[in-house]
Length: 172
Image (tube, rainbow, N blue to C red; front, side, top):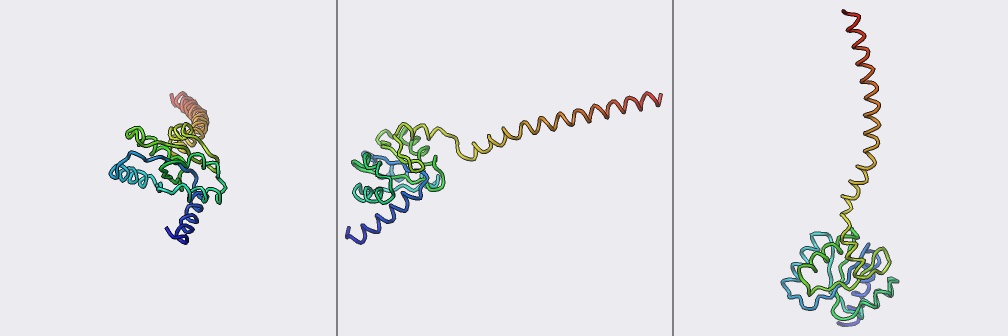
């Protein structure tokens, strides 16, 4: 690759490393083209970009993005999954895919600027999606309010029942 092309690749990588909410670095050695294509499709569905990178260029980009700690895992064939919109999606898809295809090795990653190992990535993959967490949080906040409304309605309902009974007694 000529030097200007390498500089363009490094600049693009630096932008993605800086802007991504999470990164997952993998070793894809042993996977055939059809399997990698299947993996890319699953990642694309989840809104994740998956890119094979040269370690030398990735090291330069990591230095510019101020996450040089990932240099330790930039050994051997490396591909990076960029979680731009969602921090959990890359981990979830790759961990699930690695269960089916043992050749895929998760090397490590970055979450909100902090370097994490493969065990933390596996833990991250167990977190429910953002929408589900928000739904649970709102349900938790709604439950006490619903109970309070029911208590208030109960007192009003009891008052109406008492007044109806008094009315019935007077009618007789």
